[in-house]
Length: 207
Image 1 (cartoon, helix red, strand yellow):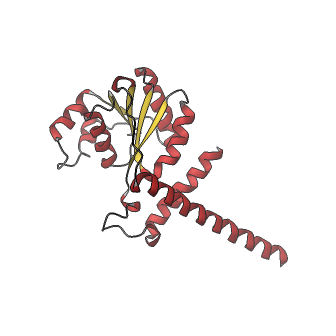
Image 2 (cartoon, rainbow, N blue to C red):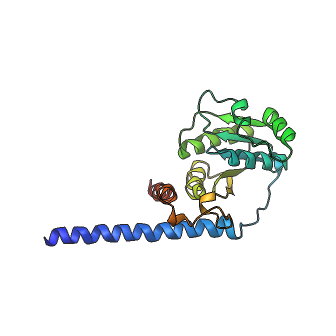
């Protein structure tokens, strides 16, 4: 019985530690990318590439907007999967996007699709090869806010010689300014999503 009791206490402590860490993780993401995102010192356009880790149309349109505003010379959409075409990506662009004609032009001239990556580590490797091919010294990394901490670990590990500049796409799940969004801890689906990402983040720190 004492062994079972100690085991139960250990499990409770582990769960409590994970819950406290998860809350801190969410708070850090919200403060960093919702309350007052840090100002970016934009490097030279010709030395900078933009990388979008696939996962939604908002990431793609954000990357295209950065490209349109001359914050990079080319855009890599990493992890699209084999068989995905530029036309498939164009279908993700909302019809109400600003300057849709310009965005479509950029898709034709200055966007590359990375089809090999199947996870975040793969995104980093794919981006490294692409950055080396184009001689970039800086990469703007565009992904969801809660995905950025783990992405930065992999990208900076894969290419320590290249400056990785995070650019968050605020998620609806963690955006309290959105009146349609409930508190993240009140939605079981959101808890599962963020907890899974936090667990992957912890593993990435030691892997």
